[in-house]
Length: 130
Image (cartoon, rainbow, N blue to C red):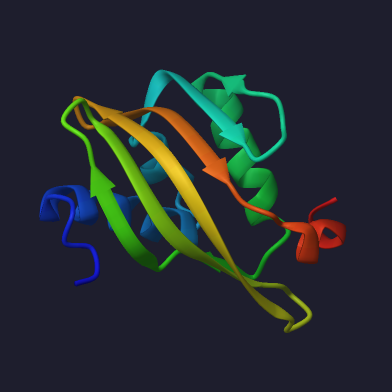
């Protein structure tokens, strides 16, 4: 069945994280990141540091009406590594919507993300995110 490969607490943690992102609640979002968190988004170079990652999230949020992330499947390894499929549901201010499937590998240590690797083809919406 869907999402049966991870602890419920892990699924809840991801759900809460994406809810904070959808709400554009950056103070709450900041609490999910370790100070030295690293983010690799598709083919972009890796960035490191909570402030840098938050700035990137704020920049994306500024271009959308909303961005939701319903989880499809979540798999969990014993060392805090979580692999998941997720739909990114983009809603733009002009009413256009796009849903794009992504696969991500996040590492969670002591209740914080230390590494995020997001593999996605945002080609259909690249022009809107430029």
